[in-house]
Image 1 (cartoon, helix red, strand yellow):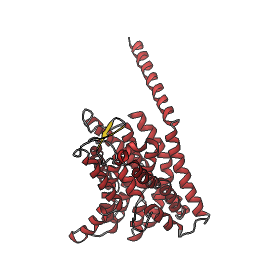
Image 2 (cartoon, helix red, strand yellow):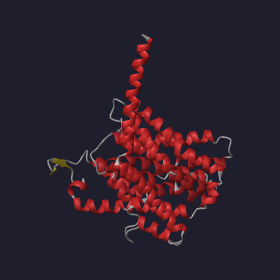
Image 3 (cartoon, rainbow, N blue to C red):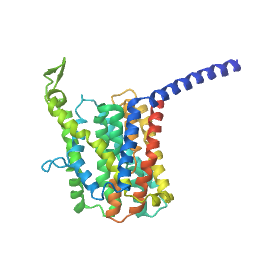
Image 4 (cartoon, one colour):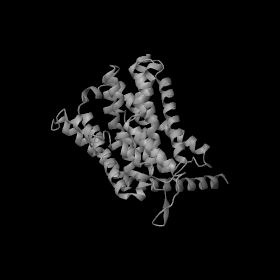
Length: 369
């Protein structure tokens, strides 16, 4: 009996392993997956090489940043707001609000765990370590990769992640690194910087359009389906084409900018910095693993509700949280002279590591879900 039982379970285990190997093969041969990873590597590498060889002068980073953020003198900061806006041009889905709650919980837990990990470090350095651990380069790295692999269907959900990300980036992270005391005098400018940020404005307008679908009659017939007039992707395709084309510039130029930024960093300093290695591994592997565990718990809790998430959405969320350390965090560190060299080293190393970690997590998430 025991022999037959072992034989049965052995056979069953063999089938599971065989099926999982087939799933891995499907992921690894997925053309969107391959193109997303190769595109990221190539564009970052091009930006890096052009900067290191001084083909791109020092001033060019400012020019590229301006191209990304400013396509017209009277319409500043256009590209990423357009990307944020078109993300909400989809049919209403309550689960996307679940992504907003989930992402907020993830950031909160990462900051709490970061405090526990670095509890013995002095407060000033501890705050920087926590921010580097919790805040990835979602807009320039995670979002474009997810869009390339899964298409525009994940943009609305990821816009919710970006919403939470910017709240923690422009308010909580700023106060942690700047060493400015949180009080009524400085909360107003911080909130102004957060909610009057062009990307946030794009998301808020997109969210408003998204919610208005529940109120405005869907009385415009297109290809046998009915839409509200605010669904400009269906009702005004020429306008949507303009906005989506502008939004598409965010991905290649953003990755080039990452490469240019890395090209200006001190490679020798980064590779000799043991603490930067530790923080980069925590950023690229431990943080997304924690988020993956949170997602698993979320799926178990809401498995029979509207808040249950599609596997592509979960994978996109993990990609965002596996992104390298944020460049904005480095800007804070430089501005307020708080671990500026360390943050630069972590950006460089975590970017290199994330090129390995992101594909591994995509495979891992596909196996689980």
